[in-house]
Length: 278
Ligand SMILES: C[S@@+](CC[C@H](N)C(=O)[O-])C[C@H]1O[C@@H](n2cnc3c(N)ncnc32)[C@H](O)[C@@H]1O
Image (tube, rainbow, N blue to C red):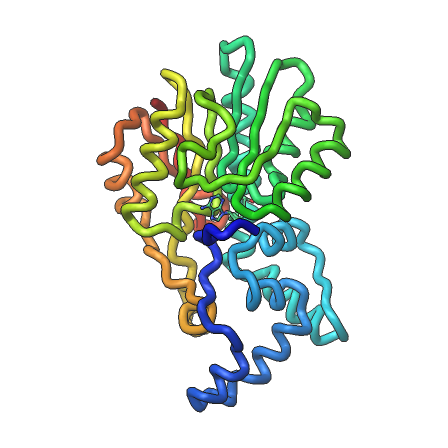
């Protein structure tokens, strides 16, 4: 990992059990140890928002130690946040394919920022044989770049390269221009200023008539149990995000130089998809 901090790494508390004991929240210790038995729960507790967490959610196969670990894993994989991530992946792949199909460019350049293990990019490109595409994925997490590169190689995708870099630093980007930029699961972790800087970066990089395909994760906690979990994740995993709704996201994009901004909810209504044209 580089010294630069992952925007998605929200947890600031060193030892969760010590923190719970110190703050008289002993009743939460069993929840912590149950989460540790689950594969998704362990990754959430350690690295909320990581590429690995994201990939476990996409894989959607309960794992974990003992039966209780697997049951808890299944519970977490059915959580609104997990369903939202899977529906975002499906929406991204569908729209990316449409954008590629309708593009008139001879060589289409794609850039996926904060690509994680690049499941969406790899899945989409593996299914397209008749277009000339040059694709790049960039993430600040070195392990994510290693895994994504290995997976692309396994699929024989020679037109796809990955590099380590900070999405907030235009100088790290592997290309100077692109037809389509994909940015998933990152914006909601940034401060309002950081987010605007990132969108401006993308705008300056896009070719005329190029597209930004992105998402904004909306407030998912609707019932009391979900609100309780949300409180837990805010208190202990530091997931205190700007939970923007559709109108706020549209207002944010109205302050950016994009045009033809389209927003729609992916299946289940947890994730707001955004397609914006330069
Ligand atoms: C929630 S994951 C989403 C991964 C992928 N985009 C997807 O939709 O499956 C967030 C990703 O952003 C990456 N990330 C966090 N901060 C970053 C930064 N400043 N620059 C580039 N990548 C970053 C993390 O390493 C992680 O892979």
